[in-house]
Image 1: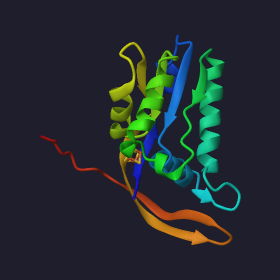
Image 2: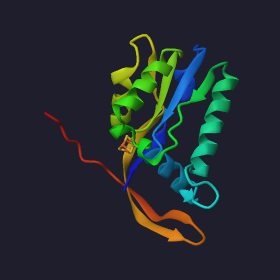
Image 3: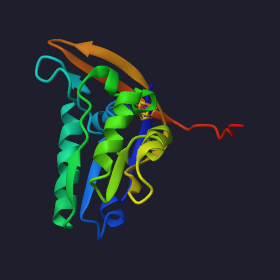
Length: 166
Ligand code: SF4
């Protein structure tokens, strides 16, 4: 099961900036938002490549930032293989590198590995803001419901053991 997140106070972190590129990982963060709202993660017949709860979350984040004077754009990953920021291709990373240069900050929605993907490519003068904080790993039951909903039921968050990597 995916990583589960808590939101960070992005608007405070972005205070005083003029622009930010929001870079979302489309798997774990989107599952987090769908499960905490008790809604389907995907509704394939309505929107085959977007999770509606996560789309609303992104819009609300953009609106809050706009209210603070920060103009934003979402770095879209529409194809399924682009969803996982921990496994992005070189081409995808290059694309982010090119776009990030035009912003004061990049807001990452994802885990530490997603942030690492971003830090590897953005210029040093572009601020990297972590929009979500890992709270644990989810344990739940994935199921399909007709006509085409993918849902996660009976979810709980399991603490991640602290582990040092050599
Ligand atoms: S980058 Fe992190 S948040 Fe995204 S799919 Fe990989 S493990 Fe999940």
